[in-house]
Image (cartoon, rainbow over all chains, first blue to last red; front, side):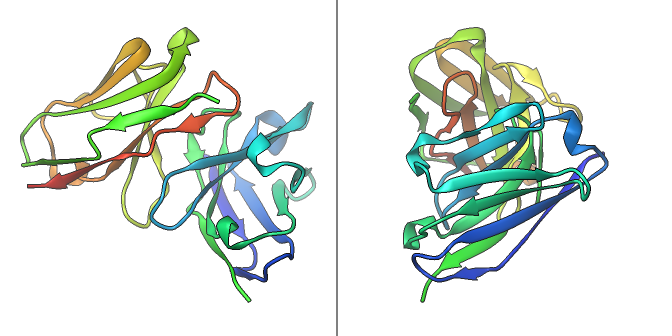
Length: 115
Length: 108
């Protein structure tokens, strides 16, 4: 059974870069698609993007050029970078398995953007 | 972008009752690429239904999905105490994938 665990700073200053890592166990990140999804406190879900070792990553156009995703096959991890953050980027960030249909999720990590 | 509109916003029911949740898409979903998720407080969403009507592994058969085109329904035949939660629909055929705003099922 695949398990995912997010890690990274819980507090980021405005205009700085948010960086999160998802550690995968029970599956190889070489073998599937991996996604990031976020949820502002008390609100709904927003797709951030997905990545696969054999294809170019896909990012939600609403985030423009601020988002980058990458894979580290040696550690079985994938990562998210979101630049120039504002308070609107405050959310619980989930990593998940799946290209567009997430069938396994991490527990989520709250990232607050505040000075 | 495909916009999903869920109704009602909140559904107040008693254990044992039937719950009917609606999800309407702003454009027709080819191949019925519509999923339903359940989310409890402090937890990640859990996949219940994919392709409009296919239950995910381990999901009880009291959960059922139906619909096609732009109108989809999630039905919980008899509510159990653990079913009180927020439910989201999601379309995964269009780009980007999008979610509805959620329906909260709470105890009457």
